[in-house]
Image (tube, rainbow, N blue to C red):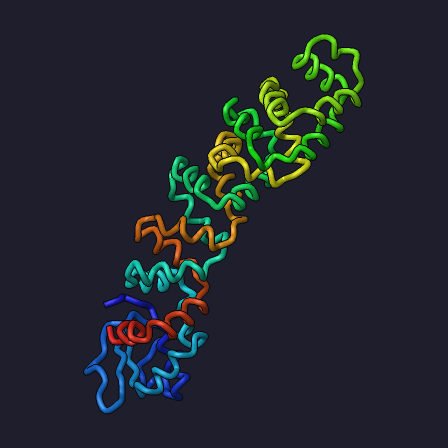
Length: 310
């Protein structure tokens, strides 16, 4: 039996029964049904009183979510929690899509920092990038990159030479000069930016790739950041494990959770489903009372009658 607090007086008012005849108080703890359903009538007995109602009319009433919410006092989180405890795991997760991003993210506090990091890395890449850009840019990512990870970017067939040329066109001359001298020798010290651009533009593919891979580590990092500013699609060329590093290393757990509230519920629901059942119950208890009543009336009418029957 669920020791559930219900508004028996609301039932009495609905059926036009006086509180004297029904022995009803404002609310009571349900105990049992005296004799169950006989001759179509149902008697609900509580520790404070009882009320006898037409079972068919009661079932009709319970199909109206707003009224059901009042009867079961679903505004009370304790009542919602007691009912949710009766759900099996399959039915329990059906409640999660009714929650907002903020409500779902509340459950993220139950993960360890390592667990949160794993959830972050396993997000769809587009969502990972959206989270990253709330606090950081590629300029913050590159200090955490290894040389081979940068080289993989420059080896990519997705890297457009037009974007590379645009980057070099905007590069301040002193940096461009140092880069070219380092690559091609001191004779390039006196050449103009226009000559540098022509040199790169006219390179054959193999020479061009060697040129990019031959850049200094700092030059590669600055170029990656610059290219991602020119074309944000280049963020997609990096694994989530790389993109997540500034978030993992710079955000406190509370800030990371707050950031993840910006995710759509569809991406948070699978995270919460990984929690133990008792913790999912706690998270699900945040459900809006009317939404909960709607779900109960449409999907769990038998459970409602069972609760009323004690």
